[in-house]
Length: 354
Image (cartoon, rainbow, N blue to C red):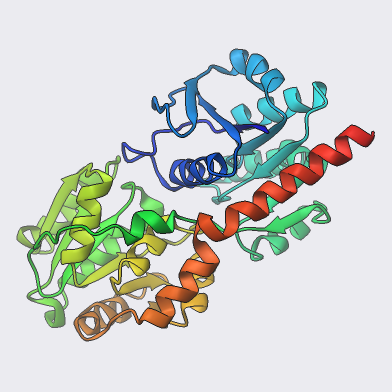
């Protein structure tokens, strides 16, 4: 089976974000199921094995869609994804859609534009495709509010390759007690300023925050840390490769994810499956993971006092083998990719009957 994955950006090995890593893991797993997998994006990182990634502008998508037996587009409110889906429909190729995350508007005008898009382009993707794959059932309310049918949906969450997590890595000692690790893009929606503020709490006087990732928020966060008198206990590491992040996870006391919105964060899975205790905001995307693990180290978004308390307690917590096993069964591609493949196969069968 020839499977085409489409996303507007794809740099999974260069800090490209959760969606790129999701596609990278799925593509690798499908390749082990005897699929010929191709990933296209305008800035696709070059990967040759076990799947192929190709740079393609929106105008070049047609040739790749014609090659495929099935097309899977990723990313909400993406003109690139919509173009790929339209081309699939015109070429009578079944297409799948995974939105990953719907972020709210940052102004009245932006919210209005997103509302119009949701009721037109998103509605097309969600209702006209062979199937929409949602990451959690929390989005059913989102669809209902916008008058979008959820009849052709399946829930298959973000996953990681369990074999990657299981690989033995060395431990990188990092400063702080607790040594707190954050991995992700530096964006306002991640609310890293809450974590910086938490460091100023006396119960975290010996803590150190290690921030891995790139983004526009860095300068503001650096100023915020200095203003609060905790600048010497916040280290910005910039981009760190997968091996380096794994080593840092082995050396940290806690992983923190303070976001106000998430789809279903891959990095949270990687931390927990590595045995690193997690402190995270109580939002649907995070709870979808924490509830499966049966771990309650969450706090309400923006409650900096509760966040500081949870982080202080993290040095006394651990991730049990039972919790890790639950997560592996629910959130690894070794277990879940065959479900995706069956959906692809069924869509091709149904399409051939039309």
